[in-house]
Image (cartoon, rainbow, N blue to C red; front, side, top):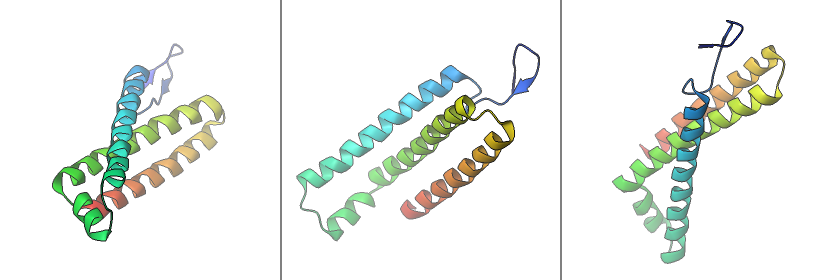
Length: 118
């Protein structure tokens, strides 16, 4: 929590700093873009069937890259949604409720994604 000019504590984004959140979101966007390029490349340059896809996705490098991509998606989504809610939802009660729903959804997707790959 950080104090604003009036001395009241306010919740901030993921890292407690707007500029760190911005950098984290940009890094996560690059990771997600690279992940997308790798997947598109796999489909463009391989004869894809279930065995090839399974072997590719279950290899240790892709499992690790997928885990990093899932974590990047979680960070990216949270910073983006937190920014939208704090900028556009003026009612603090509604904003907290919406943030709670997003946190539950993001955690569910995180655990589901980890369970799929591991």
